[in-house]
Image 1: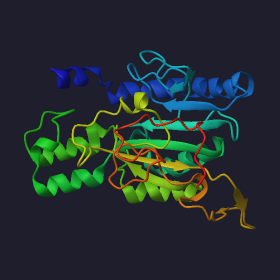
Image 2: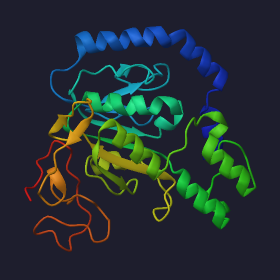
Image 3: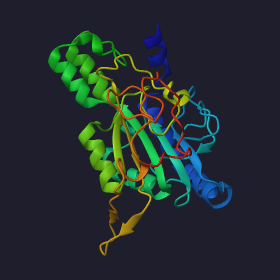
Amino acid sequence: MLQRLKRAEMTPRRVKALYYLVMRIPMRINGMIYRAFRHPTAPVRVHFGPGKKRYLEGWINLDANFITAKIDLWANLLDPLPFRDSSVELFYSFHVIEHLPDAYLPQHFKDMYRCLKPGGGVRVGGPDVGNACRKYLEGDLDWFSDFPDRRESIGGRFTNFVFCQGEHLTALSHSYLRELAQEAGFTDIRFCIPSRESDLIGPEVMAMEEESDLSCPHSIVMEARKPLHPTRTPSGSDERRPDPRPGGAHGPNPHTLSRPGAPRLAGTQGAGPRRVPYLGAPWPEA
């Protein structure tokens, strides 16, 4: 039943193409107006692609769909992000960037970097093509769903996972996401178990990250930060100053929920899962 409902909610690609053709310029103008006149003065948290059911209170929820999605800002991710330089505290993007053209992803990461304040972060997630390849080679049919097309073979379900009726325009892996982040200038790059681990968001946000296999997740999730003290080389590229403290500029990672052997704050040894502070919470000094 759930798969049938999801299939019914999918918008045909031709309808989407017509929508973006007609609305491309209005969306860009709306983004320019927001940046010039409506942009908050305090740093903001931005959520890409909330759709109908993933609206986050207290965040700026950005989507190109103003018809059925619940949004705060109508804009197209293929346009320059409608945020001023160093004005964003955190970007959250879960199962969004795989729908962007692959050739545009380097610019998208550079634009997020531009908008982030120093020390700000991104949490980006999408289908994990590496884990899909592993499960395909293992012959694990049950790991794959029969969405969006009904497929009984593991090859058909693998095709569903990777291409999703042509909706996915890129394939995300650990090495590729790391490459995109590093080329944009990000540091402190970490990969997290979806719905379980984060240095940036709280459990109420992670709760939206549905995952049925924590040992081999369907989703890959990466977190990274804009360095606190980037410097400029003569060529104009970012060069990060090394930080002598354990764990770098932000100290060790005390906020991981379930990673074995992860360091903990003093007094928490042996404690169970705990709330993960938001990005704005102070970091412990090493």
